[in-house]
Length: 403
Image (cartoon, rainbow, N blue to C red; front, top):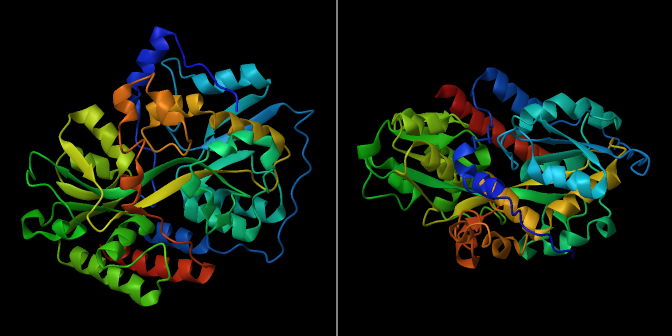
């Protein structure tokens, strides 16, 4: 593994340290819960074809370009709007990268490209970052190319716990980009006693001031954990329905005020909600932008852990270029530079040590560099079959539509 020097320009280092305050929230899933969103979520579960497409012929040797589709504010960015690590990658490899902020949420992005994927055609991206459960769907339908690990030697730096996941054992088709937790947060001025469990959200004193996420796997995942269910293990319809019934009751009773995607942060800012189910990195950003008065915690029963992952779409003819970029971002020094900006969990071993040179406080942040004790409190929502995904999405959406 090649060691990369950290940036020495004082201006760049200062930009990195200020990155948290500049970040905007980028996870937005079913933000407007309505009939259209529900229909899209259900319709998107079908592949439209039983035959798996064939991977495109790679032409990376003759075409030194690459388009990377990703979420907003999910990479280091300077005041001029450039991406310093990508500039360095191009200087090192000669591969020109078009960084396309094209992913607004998993379902809507999939809806845009699924027809081309089914035909094995190019989708306008050679590399895409999507969340675990959506990655599972792409792999199941044959929409992503098998990676050549010999082109990604830095994959040896992948955190061991992320190597063998149920939807992609051995990481043959996907590689983690960034991760995060879903847990609980509260306004420390208005809820001075804090929150330790999901059940604390149902305190009558918080009636009408609670927010939850419109992402099924996080909201229902936390409720299932509270019910004693191992969401990573062998659970079924009864376990899901029991948690969804709790969710429905709290919505019907008026305990839950809002069910939202990214806009839940605005509700916290204006104090429409005083406590919420939320995403870890967002609270770091919220405190940086609007005053240090919110606190995030993993509930006593545990939180969810998710990752967004690199995928090479089946129709991309630039797979080797994409693998070179993945390898680059698995250099610990590069991963540390990105982590300083995005405030989510880096999957790269050695990045914490590299971050010490940027900001020792950053390196100790458990929401960015969680230790084994913190990770033991987080659980990955197991992969769903296509039938389960349709059934559980329908149950969850029925609550959202009735809210």
